[in-house]
Image 1 (tube, rainbow, N blue to C red):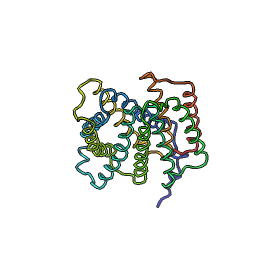
Image 2 (tube, rainbow, N blue to C red):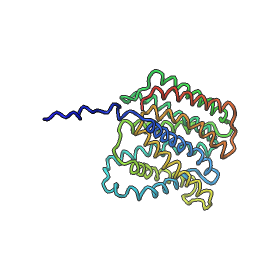
Image 3 (cartoon, rainbow, N blue to C red):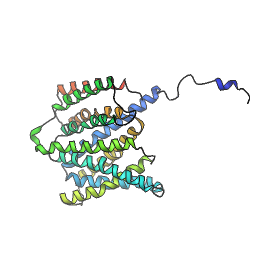
Image 4 (cartoon, one colour):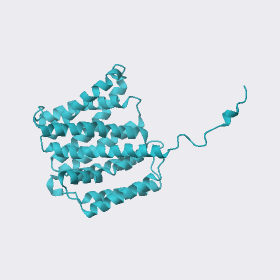
Length: 308
């Protein structure tokens, strides 16, 4: 074989090394995930004023399935039903098991900021579970960053905790949801699927429909409330919280480590509090601002120790 001098011309930089543009993409995806995730807390507070949350959730997923159907019809014909069953199981735990308890908690009077505070045990549970997945263990300075994030989250959301506005048992509902989603996240990361993301989300949504149909029927009726406000609230939950929230969550989980995704989720309570302040006039105190700043410092400490 002839010697080719051009074979020695190797790129001086590793093409897998993140560039500035790639870092911007990483930041944009994680920011979109946080904003979409926060929108669910705001959306459910809105629809709770219009009708039952399970009724709104049922129609949320009916419309989400209808929106996704045209994009997945071709893949459905070639579906591996074993993989489809796995995605259905993930949907039951990650969507029905998470949204149902949290939505009911907000309906029972738990403030969005408080619900987000309890629900934000999710990244802690994910990080603890990460030790069981090869290559995902949290180490060294990452624990310091996480500790600062937790402190900032508690400080920022502490002023929004109002124990007198809901029954005591209602504050345990978000914790049940957190445990369900953490288990589904752990399962998804350990057994990644090659199924297209939209098809996987469609199956997950369809798996939840019977659950919320039963809950909505038990709550009263499956007939939607014939008001513009109810339609807007359900549309909010479909576009921002379902297609955006779960779409970006699974995408980020596929692309990044559990630590990076979980650390970004620490921003959910501060973002929810700011959003609730702007949209509903909820109080935003100086100590909340200090807590938000502390969370940002914790994220900086954590992420400077994590590879992309």
